[in-house]
Amino acid sequence: MTCPSCHEPLTAGAAFCEACGAPVTAQSVDGPGGAGGTTTPDVAGEASPFEDLGSGPISAPTRRGPGAERSSGAAPAPRPCLACGEAVDDDGYCTSCGTKQPSERDHFRETPASWVAGVCDRGLVHVSNEDAMALLADEPAGSRAVLVVLDGVSSSTGSDVASLAGARAARDTLLTPLPRGMGTEQGRTAAVTAAFAHTIEATNAAIVETTDADSPNPASATFSVAVVEGARLSVANIGDSRVYWVPDDGEAVQVTVDDSAAQQLMEAGMDREAAENGPHGHAITRWLGRDAPDLSPRVAEVDLVGTGWVLNCSDGLWNYVSEPAAITEQLRACVTAGADAPLDLALALTAYANARGGRDNITVTLARIAGHNRDQTNQIS
Image (cartoon, rainbow, N blue to C red):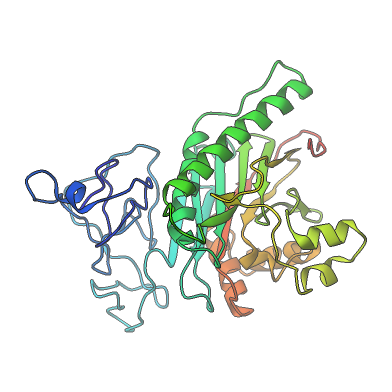
């Protein structure tokens, strides 16, 4: 079965396409003659919502680029076991150690370029993965990258489907470089803010489109995006997913500002630890979805100085390393232990969050910055 809109494979009984969010009916799936399209099964034997499954040594796709057609011909290679690295059979179990593997939605990875990678993982406590990510990057390293993270609100219905559709919609609005305005800093600020506002609108529309119109608890998600263009980092967020700049020398900087009750308490004078660990520490004050109160993102820009990492993550990671000093220490510890490639580092930080309890879904996306010679600027809004 394939989507009648974008022709991506559908899971059995799907009401909406997880790739583009289009509604699916039995008639549209089967077609006029009653013969459905060809389904490309994933390694667990179910139609996968992801592109390019099995194309490489990781358990989920390396995206070839927006609009790339699915290759036909040789059967895709089996994905590797997350425990021992050997092949996973069609039944979802490792052929070597026998470990049951998570579904592709519960754990997936993307490496669109040598300097950019991400991992999205269910964690240990939640029964499903409502986080999502979508990455885009060019070669050579340091040229241009887009890191999108959505954290579906677990108390709402259908957030796993909505967050994935929203992440892909956001990425696809950012295929071209951000505008430069009229050549002044003020002009660029206004132009970038307008571009991100368009991204938010498209993301929210994708979330709403995948939400049952009669749902009393419609899907919702937080949103954060980091766009690297040479030495310039531009970010936008709604909710409490975060973007950090972690230089190799010096302490990390949290570039985004949360929309949360904890942030309000900190602005009122409460210290971070007390605010974030209090009874309302993770209550968000803004989100995306049909009942979103406000679609105006917080926007910031920073000029990247020296070498380091751009990190865009959900609270499944920063729950355990919220302070800039803590994220700096943990990231450097992972690099020192040998996780110096983007995918290896994303996996190491995901493993760290799971080792600390994995209480939430975990998304870690990273871009390695090789170094630039420009001064750091302030947040622009």
